[in-house]
Length: 331
Image 1 (tube, rainbow, N blue to C red):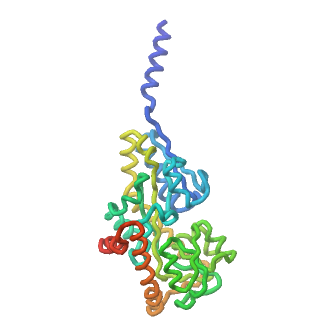
Image 2 (cartoon, rainbow, N blue to C red):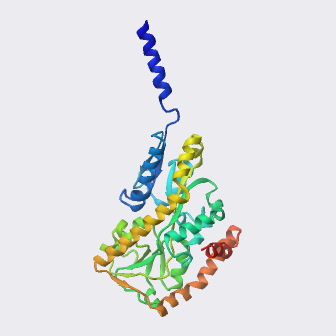
Image 3 (cartoon, one colour):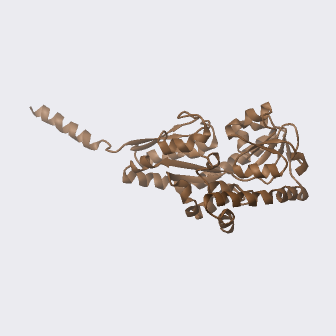
């Protein structure tokens, strides 16, 4: 009888000691596990959250579209709960991110760190973009540069007729103003598109060299073309956030936000520097525009950029140019 009592007491102690609110969050992205954002941002985040919670809150990463193919569907995966957390590019679903897509204007920011810090200082201006999700992190990459396979771009006239992969809506207006033809494609499709002639050029930041092996198929890179930075986010399903305990929400909040975003921006900066080294090692011709040539690109895009900001803002019920100027003056 005594043995049964002791056994029952031991079971009770184990039950009381077991975690009462253990949770595993699914994080979806569409790149390989070797991408800088997985290796230097998402995986370290998962490790820190698990350590801070003593294993009661974990994040399982699903790379390469394991929870569904298609970068453009990341936002819906977070909203619907297919993923608890999703790596999302606002420019891929501009209808949901009417304000974020305006921040892709060339010349607005100078570096990932400066852009990310400025955006977080003005984050209240972006709240409406995230009304359906919980924002965990928001950062940018480096300014885009131009990769070409057959034609070197040394002046504005060299852009004439080129089919150019663009990263965001505002770049479509800019590329057209430069005399080229914009082609909207996810970053994951750039290698195939350039190698097969679907596009003649790719407008993307230097971190893509390592991520998508663009040095294997590129002959020329124009390094100081007026290119914009792209924006990136980690967004969370609201139900998944609300379903965490107060302690778990505190841990996740402490490990995300501006600090994680700045780490991500630094990771993109480092990946971009490495990409430029890879281009040099592959003997790719790196072209710098002269002052006159660069001014021609800037002058050609000013009107279309202004029209884009005004039109997009009017369509969404706010002053687009004033919105962007708010970030410019905060720099």
